[in-house]
Length: 330
Ligand code: ADP
Ligand code: TRP
Image (cartoon, rainbow, N blue to C red):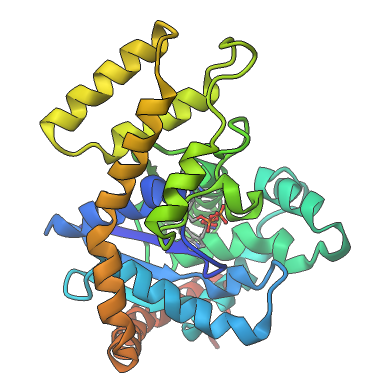
């Protein structure tokens, strides 16, 4: 069975970029019985950025609720918390000895985040891709569904696997990334940047946003600028419309809006409220599920505990084999 694995950081609210770029694929992949799916909360990754320790456990808990409310199922996937499995960080230490500094200095995400928190360019932020490689390879995952911004980290993961196999004998697969049709949703306020939690409140739509907020944010979203010359804002909104269009008539609607946009005739006063409506309806079930799940914290904890146990058993075996291969077992 092909093993699929991905992780997401508990660092504030989920936005539609996270959903359309990654989580939507997770749900689809777990529904295919051929796949053995592992999804986890990357809490160790999340402490490389500024955070409030009083908020962190709530963020972890809320993310678990969000993932379940969106349709991840403990019956189909193993869902767990990264920091509960110490073997990830142990393997990361071993990988640390196999990667050179300039290889990490090249990482785009590191460069972007280092610029953002100049006062706190900590070693964890730098080492982030190595822990990510360990997260993936410790389960010998073959495929990793992520957004486009993580592709570079996946390339490094493959390189580490190749290096390890070359030096110690064939052991790790070289995992490939799986992208959705919308691997990079752009910011609503600056269509040149990817949608991200760090771009400011109006730049993203959080899944937890109320219908009123969604309407407001879409209304103020950047569309075409420069007298219609720069169409990136409009294209981004159209791609979001397309991603949330499920029925045949919604797909036709999308095609018509797209044609209008290409001809420079798209009426944003019509299109924008319709887009907001589509997003609001799409997440109606999620909002209901979320409210229900929030009432039952013990159930959430139990799901994570069960997942931790299952993941831990596999990770422990891999780490033991790795230690043997590299000569640490006497
Ligand atoms: P953020 O950039 O908002 O902090 P994360 O780094 O937690 O988001 O990303 C979680 C997942 O969502 C990753 O797989 C990432 O590639 C994906 N993702 C994040 N932002 C976007 C986006 N704007 N478009 C598509 N996918 C995204
Ligand atoms: N770095 C990923 C992100 O920011 C989260 C992550 C951590 C991850 N470990 C992973 C994703 C392993 C896939 C596989 O989104």
